Length: 282
Length: 346
Image 1 (cartoon, rainbow over the protein chains, first blue to last red):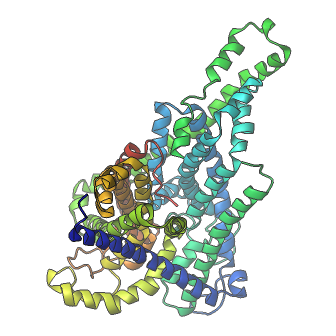
Image 2 (image 1 turned 90 degrees about the vertical axis):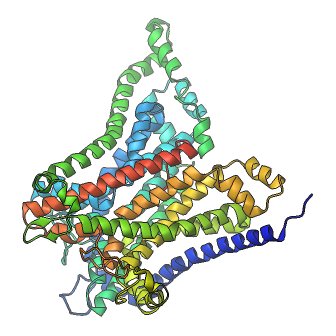
Image 3 (image 1 turned 60 degrees about the vertical axis):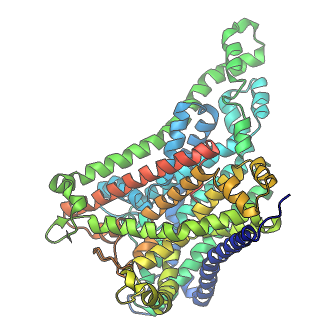
């Protein structure tokens, strides 16, 4: 056998080196972003930040308690609207959708996933804000719900298809109707996977800012009414980050830190609950 | 997951058979328990199917709703300006003259710049994780790249404003101006903020998307392709180039286009660093504006029906472009992975 020439050998080593270099170049900003976020976040967060509402412009102190609660409210309503539709559509695709019509829905869902969030914001603005004649938490929730549906649909379908066919057959063999089988056997078996999918969709919309800009608008005060402008954490981070005040910059970092912590714990907590808790095994 | 989806039979197998026996056999011959189930089955199943069908139809409905609202609300601007809207470069809300060219230019240039930076890096990382890296590094490495995708856009923007922009201003931009200034692409005062900053932060944001899809596509390339090329005496790089990358071209292209789709529609991080000035400048140091940023900045403050309508028309244009780009990307990825969704998200 011919030995490999020195030229080809050098190119091989060079390319390997290049690949390692790309990995370093990609990991560097990741480490930088996380490191800086944790560094500024921990340095900036304090009790007042978590319990108080914003102080007037230029005054130091205050916090984002209303934005944290507002975000929770908006996300809860969004999930209430988006999750049933997403899971339902996922069940349809898994149980009845192995045909062209199902494929067209799949394709639409994937395409819908790529629609810019700001465009979804415009749609929520025109179907909710323009009808109500003012900005509201509900409008933001509708926008986020629209973004959740396609993601949940696709993961739910994928998880339901992982359930062995024999399980369905066994249920049918016992004379259990199809709807019972789908809900109590198939969906139940796939629960942990479906919930993981929901949490991924949740984590994705939790940090969304663009669709909230002209739907929930933001608010400097406490508000728990869904038909009123409401503060949201990502919005507050955006406004404070671009402001000229050092104290607001500090609070923007604290907000970013809280947002990341909320996203990560939401996902982790549900995964833990699914693995060890009452949802049954999968 | 691909195998599982493929192995499970197309239609749930036993279904038609079960229906036939319950429906076709006269009730007198069925055992009492079945009879009990039969009545529930007859009402429950159609209702269940209808409910989940409505949910599935809601997805088509959503797309229809988006198209309808955008077209309906932008009609005013469309009638007033026609195609001139996309060719004019004057953006004057007070005089009600609207031309979207600077925004289209800014969106395209920032996204292409991002692709230029992201594609080689993303493919390099994907090749390293699938073909070169030791097994125990593979898991953590893909986990970390995916972690980048979970960071909200506004946090990228915040980081860019406080870390990236100062670095650009004091180090990278003076360096580029000195070495590559003659090209005309790197001229003018180094503000930090501008097209270059937007391109870089976009690149960081789309690397995980492109790299995870490339990884998925590379994993589908059959092992015997690699072994065959190696058996002919190729080095590892030659094996990757001829046996792997060449086979995965279509899928990698799909990943790149999906990344492009994400970059085109990205709003917050870009808005925070691009400088928000509706001008077309050759230099990448100059501030610019994108379609998504102008919506973010001006939509809630737009006074006057024409102004609002012009903004919605920009939204419509952005929507149509991303739809075409994403559909193309999905199609390319589907042809390689056969029906698995392209994982552009989280």
